[in-house]
Image (cartoon, rainbow, N blue to C red; front, top):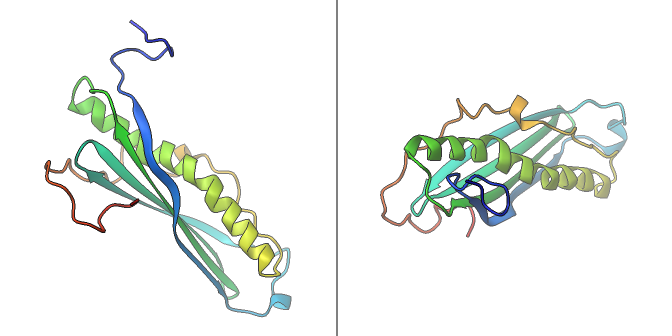
Amino acid sequence: MATDNNRPSHEPEVRLVAGPELWNFEFQRKAEPKALSEEAMANLNFSLSITRFPERKLGVELSAIVEDPPRLKIVATFRTVFEIVAEASDAVDEEKIWRAVGALIAPGMMYPFIREMITSATQKAGLPAIVPPLVVFANVFDPNTINLPPRPSSEATKPGDAPVS
């Protein structure tokens, strides 16, 4: 049986609770602007951190690190929080959903903000724009192998533990 929006009725709904929000931004220029050229090749790496919260919520933090040693280093980090608002048919289904959200959906949602921030920051610094490439996160993070923390107890987390306030 399908619902009005063509989603099977047994499939839980996931919704964005908070974010994407900028959590951290670092810009270090290690050389004079004239030393940076348009042909400079920067390395792009990602870091993914996932936190589970009571009340069926998942916090995801994505960092993009652009390095052009010895000239430049940029770190941009965004955070989001998602929740499941309908019951999953079992714990395995919920685990699959959280893995997809953590590895694919959240990074895909945050990356355009990170990409724009890196491009804008390099231009505003008077440098040739660094435009990070488009990324298919299925080629970066595997939902089956990401580090998904165990389901927390129903106790509230301490202040400051949440990725998005």
